[in-house]
Length: 295
Image (cartoon, rainbow, N blue to C red; front, side, top):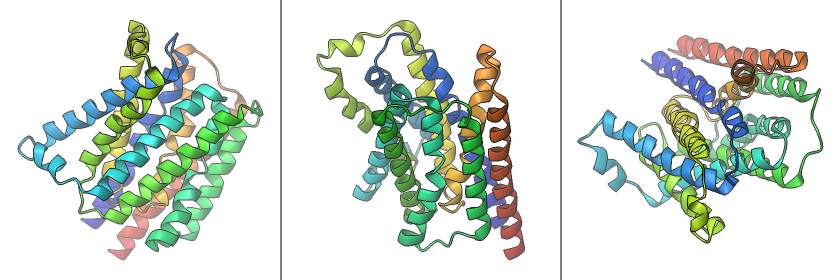
């Protein structure tokens, strides 16, 4: 049972990274809407998506899950909301290469936090996979990285810290706690944080049908499905491994652009992406074998 639980958690997180990898492509298709407008609608759709999942999973306990939310659970919601905002604003304010490179430090941030806060030992193989994944991302962006905008880089760092704290807090609260309801509230909090930037409120409605559709896809397919799977996977996967396995997002992002708009990735992008995927698969496979041997 333990082996299956860990293996299932690994699968959830890798699939979650695949859904998250659609973000860069979708943002590229935004026409005229401001980042804050896209964030507002994406956040609301995210909440609706997670709530629909909860309702379909257990209709009878739907209300109880929200009534059981404790103050510390709201910190999970706030951290995820901040991560949502920082990630998208980084994409709008600097190159995708800069954002991807900085987000690849997430496993290190989560691993260090988990070590000091939870006492979770980070095994040598996990550190090796982290270094390998970071090297792969460096190869991916080596052909076209620019200095970028300092604002976008700062937002990327904010996203890294927010997501790392989110993951560690999920692990701290324990696998017996169902954190899907607090995850759903993250969208409401993010939308509320966007409101001051959309004054007068008429700006909120200034969005074309195309941009609204993109925001809906971002909220449902990208972060909705992505974080549902990551939240489920966090129940059985150590904190340091969660963002590492989620780096499937980094490796797959160029692939979607290639398939959707026929933009052939540079050779360094393909090589680096392959290195990242090897690191992700290596960590997942080694983790499953380790749990089996302990069982």
